[in-house]
Length: 340
Ligand SMILES: [Zn+2]
Image (cartoon, rainbow, N blue to C red; front, side):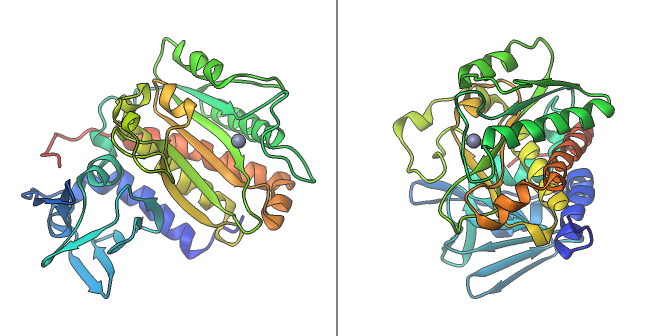
């Protein structure tokens, strides 16, 4: 809930500079694609040229690409990277092969490019309807702690988001607006029954070991990419409904994740990153979709935060601001250039 931290500034930059003006930085470049461990990788040198980063610095395993208003940090052997301070969890670690360092082509095309160039995502800005899905409900309480139930917090956030987005002129549909039980399939069916374009945001709070804390945002794993924390299974190669929106999904996740962190404030949060998963609502919904985990009910400090209405409001504001930013970012059209 503080608004003047370095994190806040860096996150603002990601949105005012990457999502709105990132396209200006794109230069023509030859993609340097290589094979490694049976997969395609793209050298960081060609990533640097394509997105017009000015410098490539390496210190040990740390790599930093710097552009005019962009800082992209990676680490050889690691799946975590940050782009202007927003954490992304790659599908595959950054590699070093001979004189070259590289990232997997699927991480470049399905994660980095949609964030760097959201305006290239076809027709994504053409929506007016937002489906907010308060997770759990009725006999399914979700996570439970000494203070409250997850289903109650999810609904509080969903109803605040509805107010904020309705005031901004969006049509907002809640999958549930009271304490009722819905199956995951009913939530998917409701969203897919809409005739108009829409986006889908599922709200949850987390639970884990006592030390686990922070915010994480999930988007559907692209075809061939594992569910978070699992190895690749044969069925991971099947396309799901949500895979038609791979690029929009990650742009929406970036907007929601960074805006929620920003509104909660750096002192009150921990960034667990943007991750890929095959949760039912993400696989089934035909609209761009994400699932937000707004903190850990099982963490002593975060549990107390959730009991504070200001925290719920901060999460809701983050989601609402993100929808507005996402819509502008994906609505801006520029002529096509070569894609990776
Ligand atoms: Zn949940």
